[in-house]
Image (cartoon, rainbow, N blue to C red; front, side, top):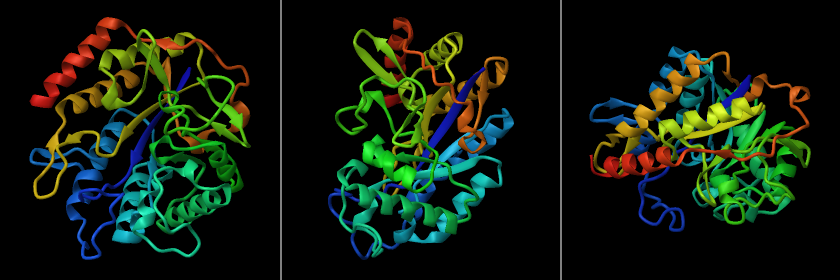
Length: 330
């Protein structure tokens, strides 16, 4: 049985030219449009954000992890964060910690760094410890029952990030992304990580990826993969006896055209991919089990890790390019 982790990065991005390099105007106090688009997926044809995703997950009997970014709440109000936590938890899905340090230029807390930096790995170990502690406090104050896992914004972690996660007594991290190594992701290892591995005191759950054409890798994100690519690599991971498979999507991934002064549009391609993925996982309960970090006992994670990279099929990749070109115009 392959353990599938459906992970949803849940975050808010302001409508402001140049942000985060250029700070928001102190006169900006309304974020209603951003909240509607980023969290609730409001469009002219209905909502396709968190409520829609969670309803579909529950309809198909699936479990999902919402990696929720809490720093935004210090700028726009903690009530919004509490509402999101409540929405996720009362529908039997889980919240884990996500941090986008872009928000540091917008908030004041004497316990944490006050200057914007793009990635966690740009901070010292001590600073990363305090940032993660701040995120934990914020989520707990918003009503999160238990926290077990962390993901750095933009996958921008290094080994100090993992040390900071361990010092904050979290068991799992899911920041390692092979497709971002050496640039955004700085978790330096002597091997390419395909399956969970204990590093610096925490279990690292890498984002799953595959080769889509010669010498090119693609991480398994809903918006980045065709339906057939996703199905093919899931089946191949199951056949190879993998322990876990980590899929990424975002709270706003089912809408497009997010901008100030107008409603977003439903992203019909991603909505179709999302529903196909849910149905595919639900239709194969003998092969796939969606699970949560809060349910995982580290003692059950196997020490032996497969080393064979997953491959897609070239015609599925060609179809994905055609789909995405069509989606840009329709």
